[in-house]
Amino acid sequence: MGVTNVEKDPTELTLTITAEFNAPVTRVWELWEIPRQLERWWGPPTYPATFQSHDLSPGGTSSYFMTGPEGDQPHGWWRVLIAEPPHRLVFENGIADDSGEPNPSIPSNTVRAELSEPSPTTTRMEAVTTFQTVASMEMMLAMGMEEGMKLAIGQIDDLLR
Amino acid sequence: MVARSAAEQRANEVFHALADPTRRDILQRCLRNEQSVSMIASHYPMSFAAVQKHVAVLARADLVTKQRRGREQWVRGDSPTISFALHLLERLEVEWRGRLERFDEVLQSQLEEGIPWA
Image 1 (spheres, rainbow over the protein chains, first blue to last red):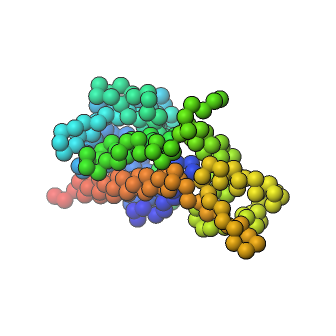
Image 2: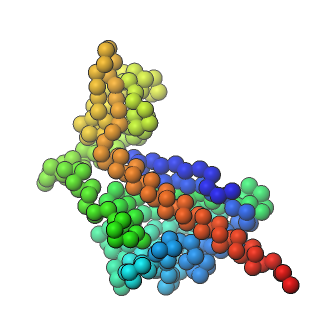
Image 3: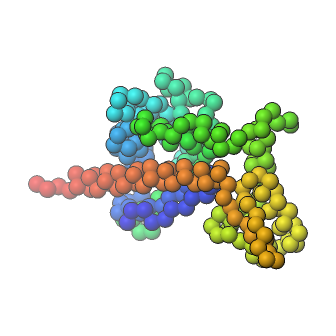
């Protein structure tokens, strides 16, 4: 149980991670669907997430912020593209400004979660995260990371020069 | 489209090189292990010359480096852009591993809460 496979594709800017859990698929889906449950795992312990709104129906949006050790609160948003409970969820995940408005200058990433049932009491979850640009991947990673650990934003520009 | 700066032109070359699925596939192979052009060519139903052309496009975009040794040209994927992307994906992996560990903990605690102890 736990993580069973990881694939990293640097040309497609995609991470595919697969895990198995000792729980029925409907229970696993609840961890995505119920905000108070989602908050317990989405953000790291140093940057717990708070979902202010959360709507997992197709076209639905979510708004959340993370709270850092120094009280900093980076905001993020989701927009649901596909929701087929309890087996498939595809959403865009982006960075928002302090008022929760999506920041249009930073391309969003796409998260696809596929849930299957190898047995009635086991759920396999494959999570695929795809970024549009290296720079947006860098910025998304900096969110929820303590100041001292952040990479200088714009490092990629230097590499491309 | 006219590139306004060297960086932009560089980015255009990278995107052009990566736009082709065969070139992405060739790059993947060369990132894993250094390959000779004939080794690469053995995987594709196209001429040696066509494969050489793909390699040249990747090399122009600095996504691979070529080195002649003996009669063979060896190709290695060591672009700073790709290694940087790989480095970021490794950090993303750490983030997701943490998420999935917590995911499991939430499921376990639910399981415990669901058991009627009394």
